Image 1 (tube, rainbow, N blue to C red):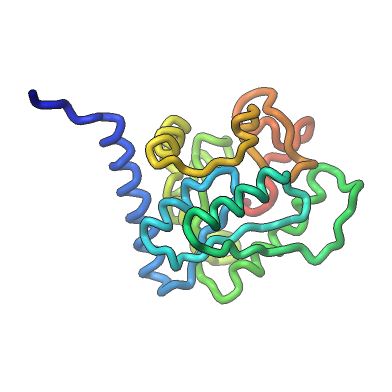
Image 2: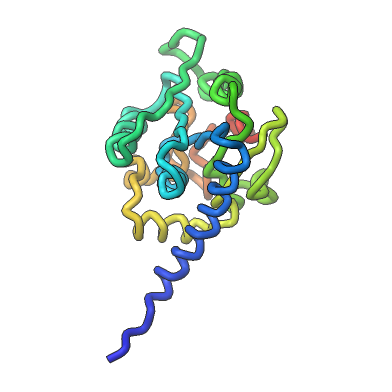
Length: 212
């Protein structure tokens, strides 16, 4: 008896092929002067990059204010892929009384340091997340003049979840607790009204400054 192909698996394979093609292009075009920037909400883009070449650096901006679950996700990613995640730390001292948003203030500078000697960075940005991201290209040039590659920009939330399931991708445990966007602890609450509504809740802030 002939079995019918699993259409959902075929769809995920097509998505992965498109995304890895963008990463392959970046890794080749910039001769290694490119990195993956991961927030450790999940490791979808890291997984895609590791399928291309395990020498692609993975960078995490460790503000000092992350949830312990996020730091544990970093360790799990390192163990799964046999890599060492490059951690960029702030120059400002830790403050116990930091206000929501203040912990993000140094992220742009941390990204500058992460990109020192590099010409491009790979992100997990997706168009469906916010109105500001709706026009994001798979390949853009950021305000610093660096090339920004968003290989899953066109994926829907369902696409991302399907890839996670098929590849058993490591995710932040906070997602299972109802969080849908995970940043620093002072800035992150459970969502109240749609995607990313748990970030900087009660303010007009929608971005930490990395993608502006």
